[in-house]
Length: 203
Ligand SMILES: C[S@@+](CC[C@H](N)C(=O)[O-])C[C@H]1O[C@@H](n2cnc3c(N)ncnc32)[C@H](O)[C@@H]1O
Image (cartoon, rainbow, N blue to C red):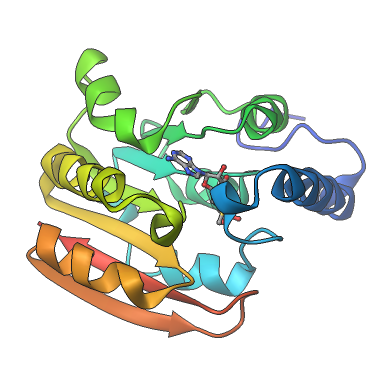
């Protein structure tokens, strides 16, 4: 059988992978609740809603902020073309290790650093601009200066036709997004714990 580089390493099939993800996520939530903002990973409904307008043929450089246990990461990789690249920025050690162990895909690079470092890292690697940036980090629990710096850097590292996709549980992010980006649309997804809103922001 041909090796599938996009497949997860975990033994025991999708149910066991999901159980492992829930356990790692839940344990990390109890250590760092404010960094996670939610006790369980995103639902498949939220994933589909957030990704449904992405033009995968144009998604050559994709950046993810806050991949956690890889709920979106795996779905991004399934849809990305073979020559696309995904840089995922995660601050929690346990998640970084989990992603590196469970998703052995050569297109994925897990960066153990804050989303605030993304613009610098892309520039250092000559990897930018980004066609899509996807963020699940809890902006509403962050100091406003840090949040605004991340939004500004994200706008600067996006390609002119790029999109910043943000999923959030709190609506307080709407105004800062509108301040940083030219166009912001949003959609609500109730089938997630907690229910969430997806914002699509363009420069
Ligand atoms: C709500 S969880 C989302 C996890 C996952 N993407 C999902 O949809 O299930 C937020 C994630 O953002 C990470 N995080 C929080 N602040 C961050 C930052 N400044 N830079 C990168 N990751 C961050 C947390 O460790 C956590 O993995």
